[in-house]
Length: 60
Image (cartoon, rainbow, N blue to C red; front, side, top):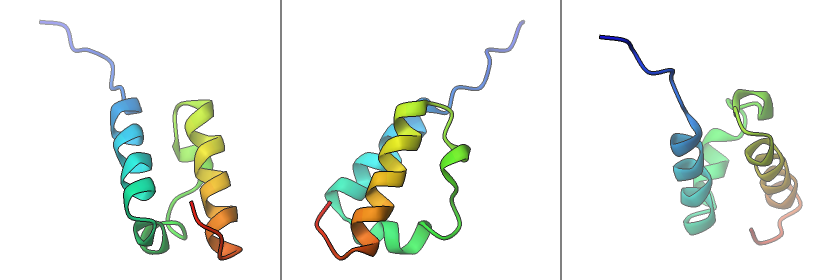
């Protein structure tokens, strides 16, 4: 049986969606995550934008 490659894009999407629903989740995780941890470029960009907005006190 061959193993499928690990695909974290679904997990990344779930995390980003959870931040949209509850931005306080970002407060808990943004200092331990790095944009490069995301495997999909758009997810990296979304995470960066969310952090910038949150740090500026603006809504996500």
